[in-house]
Amino acid sequence: MLDCRDLKKIYTNGGEETVVLKGISLSIKKSEFVAIMGPSGSGKSTLMHILGCLDTPTSGTYTIDGQDASKLSDEALADIRVKKIGFVFQAFNLLPRATVLRNVMLPLVYARLAPDKREELAKQALRAAAFPEEFWHHRSNQLSGGMMQRVAIARALVNNPAMILADEPTGNLDTKTGETVLAAFQKLHREQGRTIILITHEPYIAKHAERILYLRDGNLVRDEPSSL
Amino acid sequence: MTITDIFQETTMALGTNKVRSGLTMLGIVIGISSVIAMVSIGQGAQGAIQSSIQGLGSNLLTIIPGILQPGRGIVSSGRGAAQTLKNDDVSALRSVQGVASVSPELNRRFQITSSAGNNTNSTVIGVSPEYLTVRNVTIENGSFITDLHFNSLSRVAVLGPTAAQDLFGDADPIGKTIRINQMNVQIIGVLQAKGSAGFFNPDDTVFVPLTMMQRILAGVDYLSTIAVSVEHKDLMPQVKDEATSVLAAKHRVDPQNPDFSIVSQSDILGTLTAVTNTFTIFLASIAGISLLVGGIGIMNMMLTTVTERTREIGLRKAIGAKKRDITQQFLAEAVTLTFLGGAIGILLGWMISLAVSRFANIATNVSFSSVAMAFGVSAAIGIIFGYYPARRAASLNPIAALRYE
Image 1 (tube, rainbow over the protein chains, first blue to last red):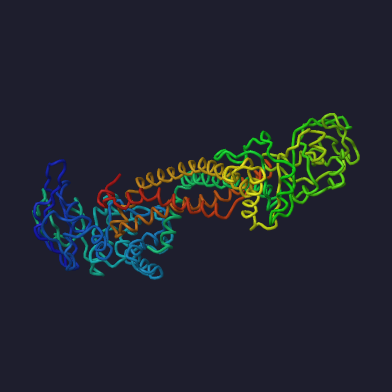
Image 2: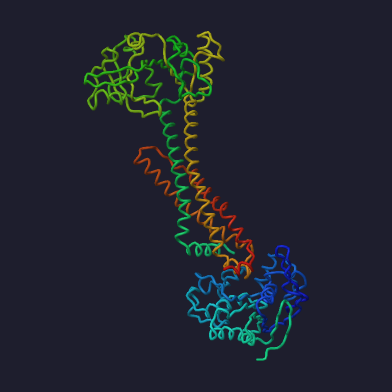
């Protein structure tokens, strides 16, 4: 479903070239739960940006769901993001003054879905993310961190994406709340067969996935099933 | 994004920072309201001048001695120096086709004292009975100068209301005597008020028979003005040409270069309209500067907003917003601000113009066109000053925007 061939990313800054990804090849099948691990500077964020169609590689090919996304314009990338990718960020990135429902409906606005169909899809997504119904009409800045992250998960789910990309989703949460968020991911993976890619630098979080990819200095150094 | 989505985003965004949105909008409110108020004062002045000039008699041609200097206009023409208009010009003008009546006039300022002991320096006009119809004046009390008074050089006078007030206060002046240039004259009538024409007050005048004025008071045989009323408005140019050639032939001068000038009310109106238009444009452009400052305020606020909401923009782009969506969202915020500001500004400007006409006694007129213009300008300001910040928001790189602290 997701296939990278020899991905390279080179940043040029004032004539000086920095090679961030040095030729990464990997493929992720549908319904896999994969963690990408690596220390800071290993290139995992850059890889996530390419996998999430926020950026394009300098060379190499990347296909998602049968579509080549390595040489598309910004607007075409936006189209892929809205249809195929759900993002969960470390800092939640919710609209603080909007209600939970409105936050979850936001991707549907950009998917140009008719307004009367949005609410039902948002409610389904909130249920799938195990978000309690009594808070649906609360403003998102009134929620706790764990709750906010579940709103973000529901938002990532709402447009029925091919994969969910989670970038350090537990980074701003305490261990216990982090566990509930990870449990929500596992539930989505087991019950709905969602493809989930988790980016983290903590081994115990990576263990929640089925498969772990290790990055070091822009190279994929290990690719192994999770020991859990 | 549908219109409803944009509207919801806009109200949410502007509601987040009510004080800032309000203060920014205030700039537009002040700009628009001052434009509306200033234009209303200018247009009010224009309307007042038009109606008082029309009140002086429509279909009127005024013949004055001497030549109007091109470019110096009609208003400032210093007349009285030339003495080329004579009494027999009047009968020649009466024979011109299309002329309804002719009113020969001679005016001069004299010191006038009343039997009540007041004195005033007013314009004394020697007139014939035709003055009443040609100049469109109405008698309030008593009678106007008759043919009998005219032919017998009677020492009678009709007062304009201001002159009557100055000389006699609230007392009835009819039958009383005034002294003009050491000569006793009896009051036979008082005119109705006409209102000021802007530069000359037709109410502060004293009317005497022209014959008496020429032979006794002034001791001259020429006229300062001949007013000609024309049967129909459409005949004005034709009568003007005819009168020019008749008078030129009589004065034995070249019709292209006569020793008199014929001015129609529309010429005077045109000059005064040009003056008030300049005045209106001047006021409106001063007010327009404050509108421009308001627009820059909008741009400033929108740029701040874009910087503050960089992460939000990054998120929106990550979940699939296109450039167009972001541009629309921020443009809508700017246009909403200026549009609301414009609406409030129009109301405020309208109230200011009402207050000005009520308390400062200046005629004002809020026209539909100035309201429509204000709306158009405020929407345009929103688009012009909102476009740059909106484009800047839309062109943010989502990765950099998400990382922005």
